[in-house]
Length: 145
Image (cartoon, rainbow, N blue to C red; front, side, top):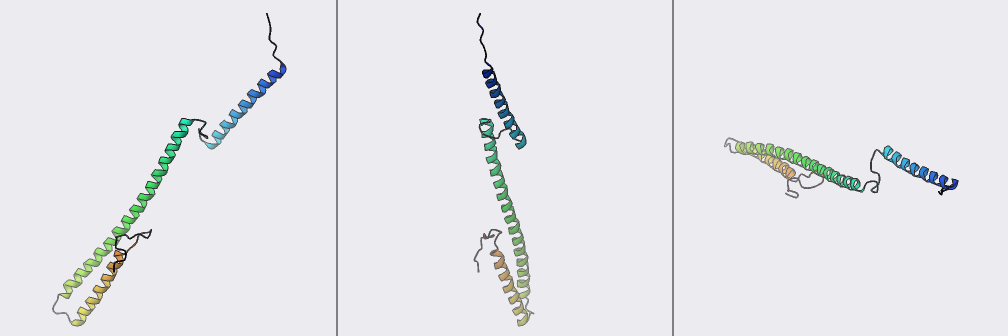
């Protein structure tokens, strides 16, 4: 029967190697624990890293879509408000046109109505040239005179 001698140096080397491995594992676990993430590097879990990257990209697209929707909603609200103002002005124009058809009005009254109609026209043109927050023509009437 032969016996193998394990030298003390080999035993120490093996122990040092195991301690080094355990220290490395402990360091990795502490990093994950402090970061609050299971996967810190793609090499930790390639499949999970790929899925995390895909979800991160999807989240960025969703956030971009949300910002776009918010801008669109703001533009629509501004357009609705502008159109409401235009409708109110047109109601006043209609009132003045009906009033101007009255044969009992003097020339001074008709001149006053004409001046107010010109003012209303200018206000309508201003509304038609309204821009949104990004400087784009809100109603497509940029430059209308």
